[in-house]
Amino acid sequence: MKGSSSSLIIMIQAVALMIMVVVPVAVLGQTPSECNDEKNKLENGCRAVIFGRDPTAACCQQVRAAHLSCVCPLVTPKLVAAIGGAQRAIRLVQGCGRTVPRNFKCGSLTTPA
Image 1 (cartoon, rainbow, N blue to C red):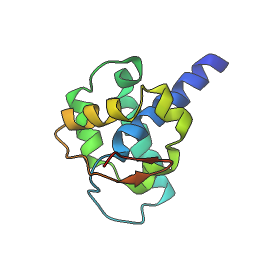
Image 2: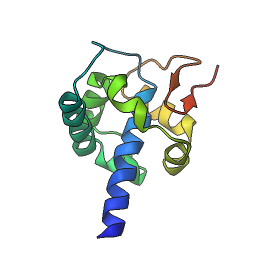
Image 3: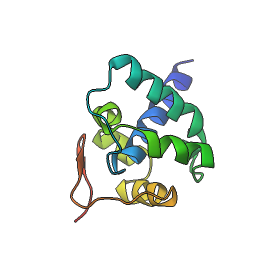
Image 4: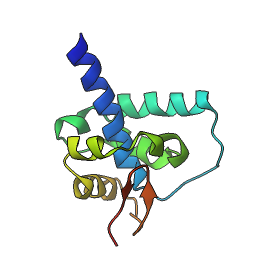
């Protein structure tokens, strides 16, 4: 059970890293409940990404709708390493049709210049 919980946490964080490079869509000040719902939708829609697969259409839809204020707090150096680095995250987000801003800080990561 412990391995399963760890995998789930890493998956949620991996999705958060993907989203952290998305240009903010949004409204600031999401409630904790709204952020929790958003994280759950991302987890369900983007489950395959943590296993090295490309994002599905459902995942990309969630990535485009996500609010950075909800996901940036999850971005850590350990997470960045776990999903294969910042460049992989950027490629995944671009694959969802999003522009990746340069020098954007989210959590502990800043996108390349």
